[in-house]
Length: 123
Image (tube, rainbow, N blue to C red; front, side, top):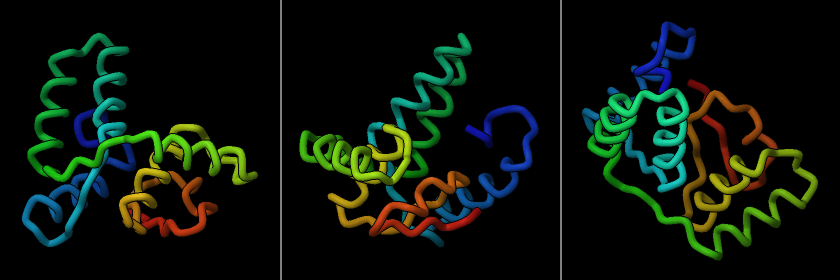
């Protein structure tokens, strides 16, 4: 969303990351929760044109989309209630990753640094 939004310090690093994924230099996946966040954000801004555009471009660049299952929400509950002090949203992202065997996340969010089994890649 930094790529499609207003000028922001995170815009250029985000563009570089997505370009690396687009050209196949970096393997990436996402989850349906991330796609939901894209739709939610742009719907709340009443920018449905951007909701469709950002969603479609992201799925095109990152076609591996992981589902969210009951096992994921169970694990998110355990992460959330385990004293890590992360948000429910981050706990769910981490649970999906861990259950799918994904260990690295490219994010500006430092909250992932406290979750065992997840390595945050700074952008």
